[in-house]
Image 1 (cartoon, rainbow, N blue to C red):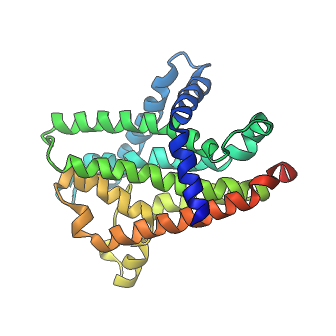
Image 2 (tube, helix red, strand yellow):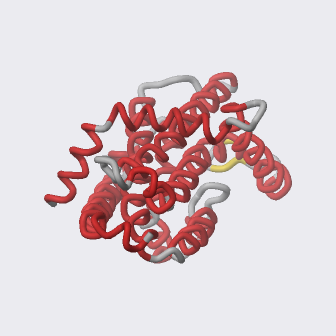
Image 3 (tube, rainbow, N blue to C red):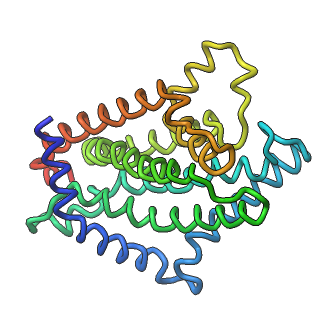
Length: 269
């Protein structure tokens, strides 16, 4: 717990630094592109169109899903995925890729995954804003449930940080972890209700296992806030408690591992 408190203090005290570094990282990532930051939105938009054509138009035809046109159902659920996938993949290798730049500085190393996550979070917020406008045009107007959306937006960032705090530390020690993370994310994409949801047609014990996936909670939480006008936090309070317990567990393990190996990163790198 002491290590976690130290990590939280580093994040709070370095908030301005994280924001500045995240903006700088965005410019670096897009400096060779004519459209620059626009690719942070165009790339997921192109993928969304492809998924809709294959899974919506091609596989499902004009069928609705839970009373909502498939395209809207998919957009609400997939919006968080582009952020959390990039945040975890890039955040997990942030320390071993950038350690040499800050090794001789009095620099809080837990900030490295934070600013990488934040650089992806900017695009996520804009993408969600665009999706909201699309929904408004099609009759899904703003409601009080948008308050809940703020909660899920914050939770997606905290979950990404909790995961990358642990994985960025382990990746310094064992490089193969990065390949394992990439494979796990690919599996989680199809096990989560992002492009489809057949969980209600499966045995109950399988449904319960699938619900243990934190991406299940986030995808349905975004949909509840944007489309279904449901207080998902309350109606699924067991999942709410479970997912926050999972995040706390990851933060405790990640902060402990981070401080255990922090002074030895140079040996492994």
